Amino acid sequence: MKYVIVSDIHEDYEALFKIIKNLKSTCKIICLGDTVGFSKHYDEKINRDPNKSIELLKEYVSVVLKGNHDLFHIKELPFHQVYKYPSNWFDLNAIERESINSPVWKFLDEYERPLNTNNIKFLKSLDEYCIEDKVLFSHFLFPDLTGSLILSKKRIKKLIVSHFMFMELNHCQVSFIGHLHVEFPVVISEEDREIEISTKKEIKLMKNKKYVICCPSLTVSKNGIFYNKEKSIIQLIN
Image 1 (cartoon, helix red, strand yellow):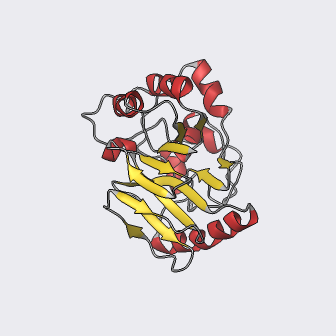
Image 2 (image 1 turned 90 degrees about the vertical axis):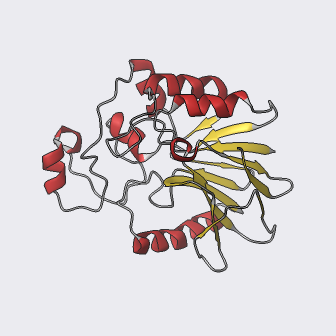
């Protein structure tokens, strides 16, 4: 099987379309979440549209998963929760969310997005992870599969351990995640668990080892990953 994996589109439908139009029909496209949502911290020169982005995914992408921004905009809590949210979480304004002492994303600068009813239903129907042929796909690391916790080096290292355990439990050899908004793939092997950014045009995975691969953010890098499972090769699309 040959996969094309994209993540963290954040409504950058033009970058998504450029990836899609150049693909071969034999590739299965998977999106790792955060299709919608952005804030003032993102590049404001980019044309962003949540509904155009979702319509492209509906037409061309085989598997779409939920990310933390998607959940926020459909007002849905993670199924795999690592924090017990207040029952009125989505009734709170930004100031009230900020006042709560919790390790979760509070989306203080997030812009409201004009999602139509059908696309809200589509986002609500998505899963938080997918396993295909011993490959695990998710927005982030287990148990925080949607990336709802605030990032820290200590937290990421702890999640890497639990994620490899989750892979072992589900007989997965390779896992693809997004969320970190990197420009190049990040490769984490089970042996050393070191986070390594790879600028190589091609990455060869050892078939007897387990790996977590963090995909580039589409809206940051205008790129995604091509994964040839039979040959255990990962390449940047562009």
